[in-house]
Image (cartoon, rainbow over all chains, first blue to last red; front, side, top):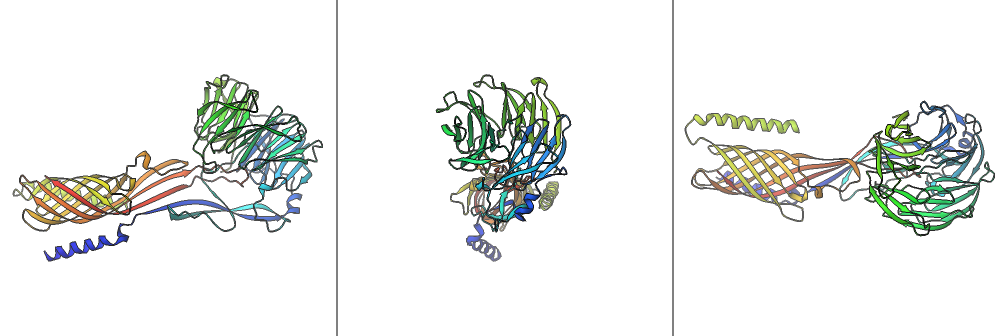
Length: 415
Length: 199
């Protein structure tokens, strides 16, 4: 009996210790940080030329012109893909441009960003491109603050994967000098454009070409560059915008600018100095936009970077450009880039693949086809040919017969 | 850990089985017994939370061996403990103190509102080990029924995880990588107070 009482007393004593009834929650998270590797500016600029083709690893924005696809490799440069036969595209060459994420082509001139600078290339012979001009500090938002002096450029990033454990209520994200990002299903933003002499921009683009002007958006700026002399762009105008600008889409004499809180419509009656006409506001989410004569199509999606909780398509009546009005919302899974060809609306819906809608009646979109071709990020639809960037391939589709969409080719992304 | 739990379960089941086969022995030595328990869990969480348990097993003289299942509502992370139970009456007679110990697996049983907020995919919740030990006092009634009260120390684990959905802003240098999960590991240590009825 004495033993029992001793045991009971010991147990109760144990329970009285506060630490014994402490709850804990630990958050195990993985992240990736990138250590910059530098080269001198002179070295980097001298090396901008067509080189041997490279594996596509982290595809970014895309530009289709004539028989060539110019595909951005994020922060590395541009792949040149011969697309004479869409059923068998050939990766032909690679232009090394560190810090490159945007690309646009007009005629024989290619415009690309090199971190903060704008590079202009003569691509008359895509296999022997020539640098014709470099304009400094056009994209100030691309400055990461790592460069010790102006004579150096971040040439590459060394990747470090790390896992840390923290208290659930006290996550520490501040870390020393380097660039950090959560890495999970990490994808790049894409853009596609094509045509001649001025291409069709994709919905994720930050460059837009219109007549003799190149428009670019930064995080809070709309910049106008005159390309009257295509090989020598000159900054003509800068318009300050609210923070959170993401994409730009040109249509006729209008520019549709997507931000994470809304869509801005600009008139380019005076192309050198675009003027804001109207705004359509929405919740804080990522939102590429495209437009036609009567409607703007805005996809809203969530995600850590995008924040927000929406995943939907907003169709906005832009008949009155100064007062855009929401017509209808459609729920989607995780929509990204979109494109329109006639009455067909193509939407990259994340893991749900590519969805093709009949958008003749915007009040009643009809899903005509859903292609489960992996995680889809951006699409450009042009003349029955769709170029779709997915998580593991650049896919070309023939949708001339909507009831029998055919996969023409898949250019694999190296894993 | 799973292998250890399985081993404990097998040992208890063998005991139960062995004891059940001994029912041919003199009456009163072995008896199938059900134990219904309900009570509260007190820990660091702001509120007091309820728990319920149902245990079936063999009463062999002063010893009880059983298998149980429960519902645990602690800290708005509902779970379903599945466990082996053992208890021993200290005295012979109608009133007796007892000691008990439970061990098993705490299966996650989260309601939608209890799940961690996340932007991502592939959400899943999983359980972890569960154990409890304590003391009690039992009042035996007629017809082999008994009521009791117990107090003990309870520990359980749970885990939630998902893959983050991150789409890198175009101004950032990008790369691709395999999805990497965010994992939330919970460890709950509580005082467990229960009323029980056995028959």
